[in-house]
Length: 392
Image (cartoon, rainbow, N blue to C red):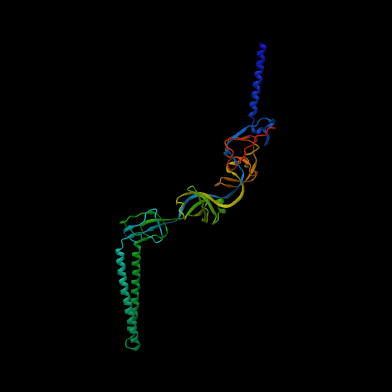
């Protein structure tokens, strides 16, 4: 009986030791394995389970190299319409948001005084014209009499001076009439350009002083974005460059219209002005926009998502590639980074169709086995799941 119990105890200890050895084998660190192959001694490899969004396929795509910019879209022109005279408004015809055309009447002032002044000036002009005509006729008569010797030279000079004086009075009357006509014209407030009423600051019946602001008009057919470009990227900016950006959840394009001639000493940045056509009015002034000043476009670049690119302590870039269901860690050379599209160009280290792991999926090491569950289509491309080995 004792011999049987001792035999049972020995068998139990052997089984416990075997289990402990198996546990130690499954927790062997990835560093103890050979590069790109299974762990030393042929022991089972660690496995990682990924979802379909954790895997992407290296594929050919167009990428744009450029300078990222952000800023606020503002109307190309903002105009303050001010009063040119003092008086009371009898009518105001527009409100905020109304479109207006060049020359459209926005408001009207009381004009009785101006109209009376214009009529008086016109009468003075007629009188002055009559004086000119009379003086010129007298001069002709006096000149003829002087030629015949009937009048002295003094009378001729007096007639000539009378013509000069009459013509001066006529010129003064003409100037006064023009001034009165301008006064009458200024009683009608006209739109200086086509646009939209942004602000209306007066009401009918209100007494307004000369120079007071009446309206604010904006031109939204073209918007302008002012953005700061870092000094190190300023040399790549030229007039006419295409700018692709997003504003209000939509994609738009514009052009660099001009830029500051100097670097701001406080921010060490160059101010760049981008104009965006907006004839349809789809964009609103004051909208925040972010985009890229495009320097060049590579139409057939090998790309992977930016989160697939990782950095070693030495500064070299690498990716986690899945080959034969096992993780590899090739070093890659990165070209253009297209932040707006979320893509990075890979110059060396990958081939089209290679599958790479994207983002942070936990602890990963070279030689680990990979299992993709939850779908067959990895991020940004299609991947075919590893087939089961055929039975022999």
